[in-house]
Length: 308
Image 1: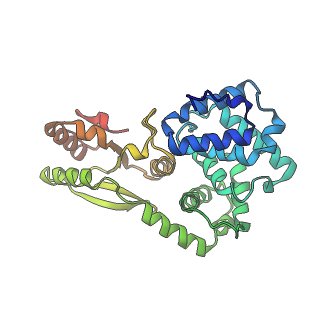
Image 2 (image 1 turned 180 degrees about the vertical axis):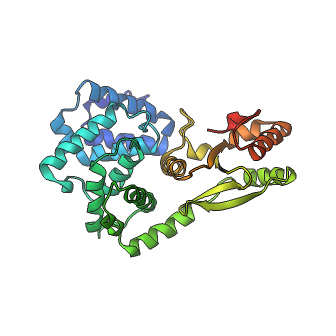
Image 3 (image 1 turned 180 degrees about the horizontal axis):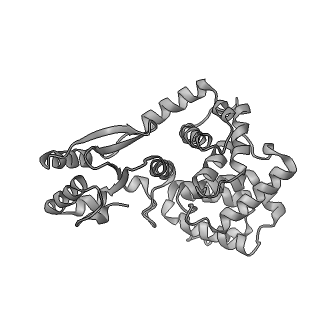
């Protein structure tokens, strides 16, 4: 595209969405260029309000993509987020929840939940979540990604009900037979991806005589790579497949998992170890890092730059 010097300003909104999705699939490292372009367009009102409403399905696809790839986060909401939410709010007021099609519904709710500030709940989320009870899309089964997002949304809903933000009836929004499917899908997904590093860390922890468990579930919903029993800490490993290379932040489903664990683990410290940084350390520093991690309840000592 650079060689052909295509002027994407001549594309309509739907065509731009298709192009950005294509870039994400084959040249993900260039996605930030198009994200910045969309931000610029929204800041200058290049896309009229009517255009965004008429192309809301495509707008929702881009919103989900940019959240999933870490360009829109709770700490960096950007103009894209605010324009999207305001457009959605207007559509809900004028057309109701049917303004979000079943093709986009799961992705939209998950994206909103992922970017929600815990201290300020988004009233749009429960309105859309309730619509899941009537979800029908016989022509297209739920994708693996949607199933995994539904699992995380079910955990999110449990948390909202527990603190009294949502009514208890919302427990039944997702039918039991669907909950069984998403739990199985999540169980297959939530596995260690870096077995060689996990084995290396486990051997070193054993030599340090640390007491720990591997691949154990905490808070009944999510797996951690290690649970250090004597110091009330859990460890997650992260690799390049799970992060935005520009920010080094966890992406998508992994980011949401971290958010859940951070909120649910009361009195337990959550440590994330970057496996690339781990591999760059010499063995002496690795032992020093694990010694401090497994001996002291409060983070201290050299090597702690491995942790988020």
